[in-house]
Each structure stands twice: as structure tokens, then as C-alpha cells.
Image (cartoon, rainbow, N blue to C red; front, side, top):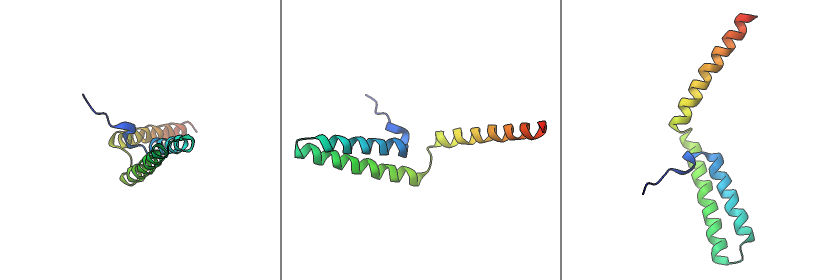
Length: 82
């Protein structure tokens, strides 16, 4: 059995999970379930802060860098046509 890395440490997705946990906690009847869901929400928020502190994942940095090169190339092409 393999364990996949969820969300690839994306702060936006981690915060979305925190929001979902809070919503579920708000409608939960059982106090233990409610407390557990709020604890999960706090944990997801902490993971989001840690992910932001680390910066983008290596795959994302590589993707952003390659997109930047393409964008600069497009800018050069646009300037050449002027």
C-alpha cells in the first residue's frame, strides 16, 4: 500500500480543507466530532502556513520557471513585431 502526498503542499488547497472541516464542524451534532473537526481545521491551517514558508514545491518552481521563460520569449516576439 502506498501513501500519496496529498495536495502537494499547496497552501490554497490546505486552507480549503480547513474551511471544509470548519463547515462540517458547524453542522455536527456530536461534541467529540465537532472538536475533532475543529482540530483538523487548525492542523490544515498550520500545514498551509508551513507550506507557504517553504515556498513552492520543486515541481511548481520548475513549472513556474519554464512558464517565465516562455512569457519572456513572447514579450521579445511582441517587441520585435512593433
